[in-house]
Length: 202
Length: 255
Image 1 (cartoon, rainbow over the protein chains, first blue to last red):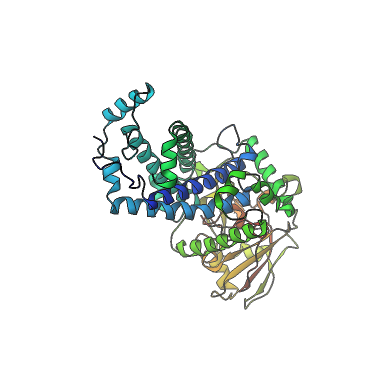
Image 2: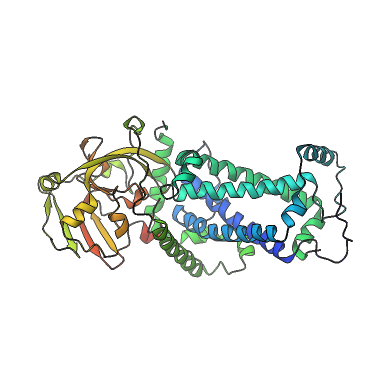
């Protein structure tokens, strides 16, 4: 199942992928930390985020950051998806993918038996996780559009259950994204080669 | 039916409002921003140059004004709701506490008009009442994120602007209020069919807490763009800003 190309000096991750990855990381960091400050202005649940973890200093500042970084997130996301489709990487790297394979790899990973011998090859858990986070960010963008412009995007508003429902969707999609990042960081720490590959390509 | 605003929310609003009042020290927003060390490392730009960051963010905010004006469809209506969905009690919200709501005398009240308008006579409340009225049940969305549904009645603002012979090609309509609040809106939103010079709330004369004697009600804009206790309206091509907008809130503030 591994990639048949020789593990030569070729880049594991092409430059465009590394760039879009790190730009996305920055955009997500700004969006999440400023978003927490915005959440604090009118919390949906009985808790707030510690102000020290938030960006913007007060509501107006947080909104300025949020509505600036949204362009970075969206533009970078479009470039990432376009290059993935055009290069065929989307199909090579992420397919095939079956629930059975995800489950098998997950069990193997939990027993410490999942190989990372070839970083070119994503195991099924990785495939599922990376596809999930792409779709999750897409949901964040769409629910964010309903919150920002609920009158101007009536179809989207209705599809997402209305303004108030979109607030909860936006929150839970954020929570899912942050959970992904937490696991992602742990995995990168456990297998540092993957971090190096995402920085220098090899 | 959505829940009514809890005490917790109100405290939050009050806190944010107080935060806003202290905001002359708005630069605190950047000093605190800088505490997020990781970000400073990642952005590669010098975040200690807080003036530069602030200018850049303000520019993007102005760019977003343009995007919102472009997205704004003058014929697209905000959703309306049955009266059974009205939020009760509808939350009080201002940059001050409810004990400081201005008490305007309806008898002596006159609405002043200035700027690019042909008819500059001051309007009494009785004169305003005699204009054609309509009402609507719409969602008020606050910049903080919460929303509440209310019923406002009054004069379609476009009708009023035409009545006073306003220059409808002008860029801005500005408002000065009895509570020292001020704000301004774009002409396309001023002419939107759901933009009301609201004189009633839920079928009753607009009470002081909701903006007596009148509020500009726009379901296409966030709450802070909807001025209460309006005393003077002016039409202009010079950007008038606003109370919150001058402190960093987005000017267009559309939804």
